[in-house]
View (cartoon, rainbow, N blue to C red):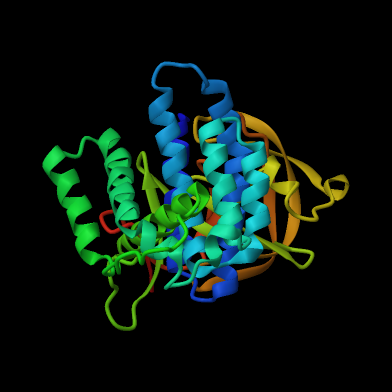
Length: 339
């Protein structure tokens, strides 16, 4: 799977999970887990692509993914996330992206630039410059995606009109440092971009009253279903391909390392894949598998080796779960309707 597809998949998965969660602590954990996925999956691929044709496009895809995760953390002032962003900046193979992540981390940890309050010199002396800078940032972010010049100018003008009036600087006020100017620019840009992203994420199809649905993703005609697997007091959120041809629910072997599963006690078995190949597998029992409104406790799942592209999905949701429930797949609206 190419890097752009991987970034888009992670971003869509996070947006889906956030729509289904209302608790602030859970939403924070989802974003931190997404940062971990960026370090584990995205950065290695970005490092391998360094210097290749089209690298700028890949760089933009990674920046877009990171901004969709980090900007809400900045807006909410979640200082506990600063260390995660700083660690991510250190692991980043791209200097430009690493610098941006470091700036996010410093902002969240309460760096010097944040100390300027609403009436501080940093706000009054740099307000107009910050608005122009944000307009420039919007031009940079929108240009690679083919947005017309008129649309770009309209976006910038709208941001200026929506911003608070900036009082004139008073004589004798100290000139703000470059770091203060950069933080003020990032802060305003973060607020504007986060507002737009949240409005976009909050626009799923509204089910009718009393209807029970689960939001899914449809990628290359595959239905990717959010599934929670619990074992030994730990729970992880996965995306499994809905596969009516699979007798048993199967997880990729790499998933086992994220749960306290004892592989030594697993039973050996064989699994038939969608392409007809038969591969060796192991059968283990987990405490629970939850999909939408239904939870199956003490359920056997298969662990299979997987050599495909990482990050697209985590295994197969088989008939051992599906045959026990009535459901309908709405491909157009990307929903499972439960009856």
